[in-house]
Length: 217
Image 1 (tube, helix red, strand yellow):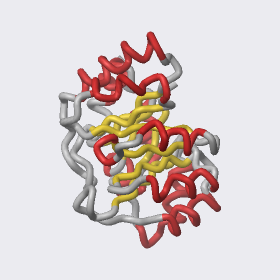
Image 2 (tube, one colour; image 1 turned 30 degrees about the vertical axis):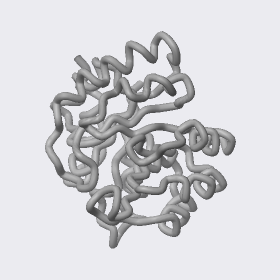
Image 3 (cartoon, helix red, strand yellow; image 1 turned 135 degrees about the vertical axis):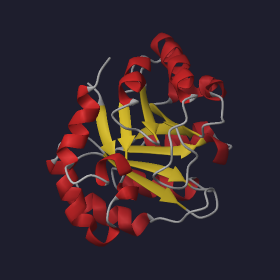
Image 4 (spheres, one colour; image 1 turned 60 degrees about the vertical axis):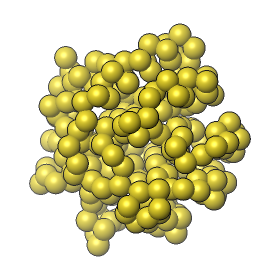
């Protein structure tokens, strides 16, 4: 069953609690939070204080995507708060095994995120240690970007290897996801689809989420 994770990056931040309630009622499976520090990516969103407040009233799992230069600063705290999914970028972390263990020792599903230009083969040495992989289908930093098709091959390669050595691995895709490319993303092996502007840019969140589920090939 495909999981849909609307990204709050595209929500109305002035009405954040209301937006979260609406997205939950619309059938979202996961709440995706993009944390940006203005260094690893050229944008700044929110940090730990906002995540803590969201955790208090969210009724569905929370997925924190750390687009930051120093992910280790966040990991222990996110673990204490029982965040469900946490991913950090391979491009920003030299001690991947250590940081995965920090998360998993706290019961958090630990993932690695990859920029579009980063070959998926670079995570093969740690694939057995991962709970999920977040494949970026746009260059991280801003919402509303166009989907980069080269990720189809990355998903397919990752799925084939994971089925051999880590069949429980979940593949998450983030960036430019809509009901046009969703069928192919699912057929290549995606388990979680992150959709920001496609969902929050519509007047009918429920219809948009359902359209991502229904369009299987």
